[in-house]
Length: 107
Image (cartoon, rainbow, N blue to C red):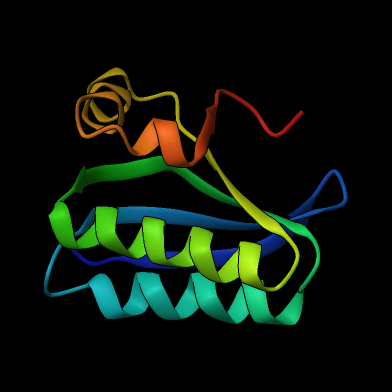
């Protein structure tokens, strides 16, 4: 499955919506989209919308953690929007949700 990212502004918040499988083959696309948005919107909150993600491997988790660090270093932050129960469980089991806030909406 291909990975597609779309960058937009939702409710005034820069958002990267991700659709597909985030794995070793596609992680560069995911990383580039997040970092480009973070650097273009320094000192702001950026949201990674993972509602369209079918699977997220360890490389993808690492990208999320690295992007959160980059956002904080730039004076902003990164949050995740995720309504997929299986993916939310993975974020909880790996404790990524302890490092990055996981929400059900961008509100």
